[in-house]
Each structure stands twice: as structure tokens, then as C-alpha cells.
Image 1 (cartoon, chains in turn purple, red):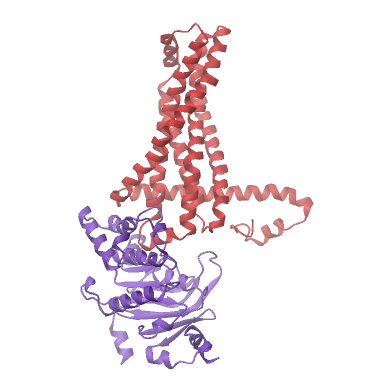
Image 2 (cartoon, rainbow over the protein chains, first blue to last red):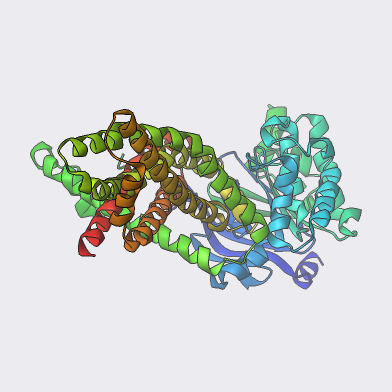
Length: 265
Length: 287
């Protein structure tokens, strides 16, 4: 039943036999043999050890970086064949939240960070931009930080600015790179609840369910949330299937990322 | 060095053999490596410059609302904020060089040459070059650090993730801002040093009336001087922007490589400006 459902839903991101290289050394492959299909409304959780190429994988998935080999499609269109402005248009339908503080533009205030893509891409009047920025800041719970520069924002709240910036343009899918890294339980809870609300259809987005991809090196918080699971192990792509299949899986890396091995020892 | 910045030629097996060969050959190889590096940089710079020009022309209408304030900010930063420094330099230049030259020429009775010497030295050569070097020192270096840091911290990728063209957002405003600033500042520098030079000569009791001085200057200036001054200073501004942005953006820098990129950019920018200057000497000799 699940396979039939997967085929019926339109494809958001698709990779076929893709190899992912690191942006710093394009010759070194980080992950090989990625056969991955993210359909509309999916909630993927990708687990991997730190430094195993999660960020590069998400960069390729979002269309920022070309795969070293194989094909990559965004919304059914092959990205290698797209013209620059067509690719830019497709890329805007996918939001990407970077890890470690969200890579904010350090010379702009929080509000300007969020307004930048709106001013660049939308022909809206200034009041409308301001209203949208205020609404997104409110959504991320950081309205009081609007006038601060990113360096003055508490570290735990910086990723939320990145989240707000990615959501400002109303994307259809959201990719998150290790969003819970270094967060205390209270902030981690906020993220989990917020992402669960997005996946179920947040009222801010008119109850439209958002396609989510989360990459992380600690899978404990995600096992109850994610609907599809995969691992990157020894530079290979390893799909695990749905939640039940992942929970029953005895793969040692999965046990490690769930910190189950420490518990049994 | 070679390991950290592998370029197309260091990947060739022949080139590797040459680079790793023992001492006697390595002196020659040093020159060869330098030349190959130079050619590689030149190729990269030209490609980057052409891409930027292409983006500046083809995407001229894209996101004006974002880019216009950036251009204004660059003109303010590279132009307006540099005015006090340019004034200081112009006065110093006037006192040190112009004043002394005027005094010397008057002593030997070569009054009639004053205009020609001023125009040749100041309008054609020292004015544009000095301004370009000052803008490089004040703004060019800051540009490399800013862009290099932005690149190293992944802000450039963040721009791309938001489908914002980094060349349009980061490079084009700097190119326009620096070209406009170097042009305007050169004009200020020349005017200030011509006036302050005359003041110095006046203090030294040189028998030269202001009217005579400015008449000579006007006589020595040809219409080509105005056109070429504009072309040259705009060329310097574009060159500075392309070299500094190239060093900051073109490679995937790590944060510890930013200082290195900055010093490299200064060297390249100085060489580029002098080469462009040499090109203009040929033009001046031809007309």
C-alpha cells in the first residue's frame, strides 16, 4: 500500500545513482550510489555520523551543487538540463536551513536577512515585505530580535533566523541540516513541535503540508516524527523504509545514532 | 602551496615532475611555476571579469530595489568617506611635487612648460594611479576580507540557496561603485593638488600670476585628456573590483586563507593597475 501511495504522489527531489562530492575538494567523493526519491508530503530523516557528507547531500538535493555523477531532479525536472533562471525558479520552491547558526548574512539585521529574498524576488510594495517579515519572525518566535545583527542573537536562536529566512518565500519543501545541533532540550522541543506542525499542515501555510527532509547525527528525537528513514554508511546510501521498518532495523549504525549501543553496554 | 591550491597545471603529471625535481633545475622551475601561476590567475581574472560584465549587462533590470542601495552604499564608502583622505593627499601632493616643480621651472625660466608638465604628470599619471592605490588600500582590502569571510562562512552558498545571484548581489555593486568613486576622487585629487601647488608657489614668491598659471594648464589640456582620464579611472575602478572580488569569491576559501587572499589581491591589483597604466601610455603616445 505504501509503495502505491509513493508512486501516486508527485516527486519533489529525485536522485538516481548520484555521487556527492565535497565542495572543498570536488575530486573526493563523500557519498556514492544515492537512489533517493522524496515525494510530496514526505518527512525524511537522514542519519549519518558527523563529517560524512550530510551537508553536501542536502546541497545537492536543494540544487545548489551538482552531483559528481548521476542525475538529480527537482519537481520532476532534471537540474543539469535546466537553464540558470529556470533552476533558480525551481530552487526557490525548496527551502534550505543550514546547520550551525543558519549561515546568516552577518552585515544585515535579522529583519533584513529575511527581507532580502523577498525584495530580490518579489515585486511587492515595501509595506507588504515588512508585514511578511514580521509575520515570519512571529512564526519563528523571534519577533523581538528583528533589529539585531546575527552576531548579537543568542546562539540557540540563530538557526531560527535561518528557518524564518527559508520560510519567507513560502517553499513547498524544507531541507534542514542538523537543526538540533547544540540546542538545549527546551529549544529542541520547539523545533520538533514546529516541524511536526509543518509536516501536518501549519495554519500559517494555509494547512498545506510541507515536505520535510532532516539530516542529523542524533536520531533519537526523530524516530517518533519522521515517516521515511535513511542512513549514510561507509559512504553509501542506505534506505531503511518507514517508521516501523526503521524501528525494527538492527543496523549497527542506526543503533549507534540512536545511542542504543551505549545503553546496552 | 601547490598542495593547498591545486590548479589545472599542477594536476598534470609532467608539471608534477617538474615541480618536484631537485635543486639545480628548480631555479628555472621557480620562474616557470611563477609564470604558469601568473597565466592561471590571469585566465581566471579575465573569465571572472567577463562573467561579471555579462551579469551586469544581462541582469541590469533584476532586483533593482536590492542592488541600487548597494551601489549607493559602495559609492558612499569608497567615494564620499575617502574625501578627507583625498584632500589631505591632494594638498600634500600639491605642496611637495607641484609647488617644487613650479618653483624649479620658474628658476630656469621655463615658464611656458609649467602647463604641459602639470598635465602630463598630474592629470595623466599620478592623479589616477595614486587614487586607485588609495582606494585599493582603503576599500579593496576590506572587500577581499568581507567577501572571503562570507565565502568561508558559507554566506555565498546561502545566497545561492535563496536563488540570489552572488555576482549580481556582491560583485556588480562593487564594480559600479569603485569605478564611479575612482573617477570622482581622481578629479578631486587633481583639482586640489593644482590649487594647493599654486599656493605653495605663491608662498615661495614665484613670479607667476594665477591667471597665467591656469591659462597654461588650459592650453596644455586637450579634449582627449578628459576622455582618457575618464576611461582610465573607470578602468582602474573596474580592475580593482574584479581583482579583489575574484580573490575573495572565486575559490572555496577556508577562513585561515582569507589573509593570504588579501595580500595576493593587493599584489595583483597593483600589477593590474600598472599594466593598465602602461597601456594608456601607449595610447597617449599615439594621439
